[in-house]
Image (cartoon, rainbow, N blue to C red; front, side):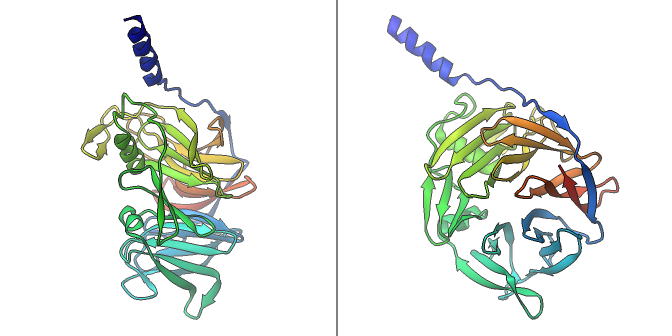
Length: 335
């Protein structure tokens, strides 16, 4: 009897999770400059720095991809017309870059393919040289496939594992070992479904670590991609949601968690709501180390940050933001 009581106590302790909001040193950026407020986006997203270039998606049907000079803000090139042709995109879903080789990857769910654009080789007509890679059925089902390193890509798994890693044609399952909060997620499958559907992710530039943060509440995970193990787990805000099957919906009590991630080899940067039912995007960018410890919070004034990237030296942030007039602009933020 005593043994069973002790075992029950031990199990209850392992299931108990304490949520503790991150405490940041508050800082103001050295400078915030509007880099471009003339090029109108339908929905600007996923800015990425490649040397002197700033590459991003726009949501425009005529030119889905825009490339800017990151020093002047001038538009250098735009391409990616909607359509089924060889130089067109049907349903682009994610962008990622191989900075070493100056390659842009577009996951086109409509074509069930990864399109590879060489940013150093621009053909007549303003379209970079490109190759198309058919994806495995596992990758196709996810619609979110991003470059990792070398010839490897990653995506959230549809079912059965935490994520997928591999070449476009062949993938491997990536399974984490435990459930962060078994009171919230009774089974491993519940946890996988939740984080695969309701999380933001970013890979460290060296390709070694991947961070994932929950959009409801604030659970932060960091995975070592070499050992395929989770090495960091932080509980910042409780995930509150309504679940129906594999669908997770917010409730009036839901605390908004992570909205966007960007990474350097030294730090992980995030926009984080941290409040109940947020009605707009965050206006501050939070800085963590790769152990998940909060470092600093940079207030960006009246700008709502929708997506951003950080230079490798941690000196500048390039952000897509919404200003007071409701229009999207490109910002350069010096830290």
